[in-house]
Length: 283
Figure 1: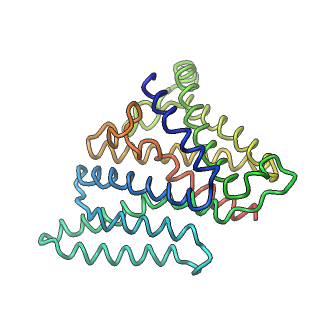
Figure 2 (figure 1 turned 60 degrees about the vertical axis):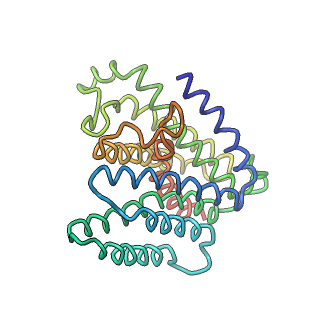
């Protein structure tokens, strides 16, 4: 825990500075994180039996992130980029002499690129989010930084709430409902108590965030739980990938935390969920 705390103190201040600067600083940071997480993803895929085309996959993922920063240039550009990526990955897979290796490379490249490319929704949320009223507490941050901050705090709230409540009340709640843990074949540490604690913590943070952004607070009763569930699914998805690869962490880059993917897995699915909700109901 001390090592995790030291790592957090090292990385949180730069993150705060980047969010405050906003604009292309956020985009460039997401691009860098996409590359680092993508390298880890393709290593895990290779260990799991999917020897992909990593540099092509990384290029596709970065292109998707850049496109998210300027969503008004071409309608449907994200889908077009995904289609181009699928075609390029197929062409690259044709070079494999064994058709089975080629199919695995094709599937692995497309999956890895689109999976880590989901970080683009962090940028898309900031680029397309509704304006913050001048009377709102977060008005000084502007719309981009406000919504990125709400997303970050919401995911952190889920992780913190799930960890603290799971450790404190896991056995007691498990005895009450008859089973303490769930999906043990993917992640043995997940408990129902942690799930409930995470959802409650996320909902509270989202409610406060919507109030600070000058939005209808009651939306948080829906947005909070679904963002929390998406964050949990993101964690489970990475756990499944690591188990398939026989790895404990995505890498050892961050002492006490594992790899970049280990820190971003929840954002990969929570980002799209929050973006879709905000752009659909709060515009």
